[in-house]
Length: 130
Image (cartoon, rainbow, N blue to C red; front, top):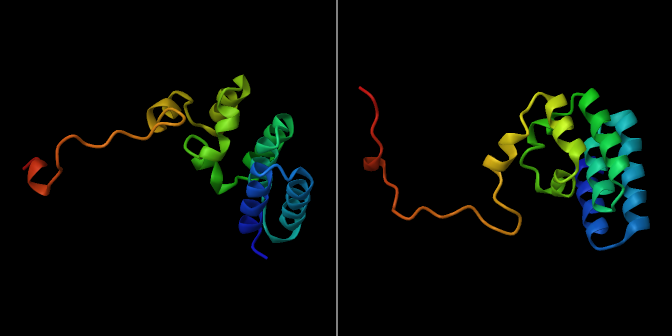
């Protein structure tokens, strides 16, 4: 069993309202983390969708201490949208060494897409210094 894929499944269960099954998956992912790597980030995503925001933050802090590679995605991971409005999120972003202001530059507003270019882009439209 791949713990990351298992966590995605748990996230989907949480989105579908299957709380008990999602929590079971979160526990399994954390248990796998004891023997096969660290998966606190993945478990945090499941808890945040379920509304267990405090547990989600605890697990994110644990993931930061474990030096999870997923920390580099916290500004753009849409699965963390649930936490973006929480005042603790900006502090957490800073604790990872990132700037919270970047989140508004990188992510479109919820429910909106990045704007499409209005003019075609071609290699000829770029100018390179000589």
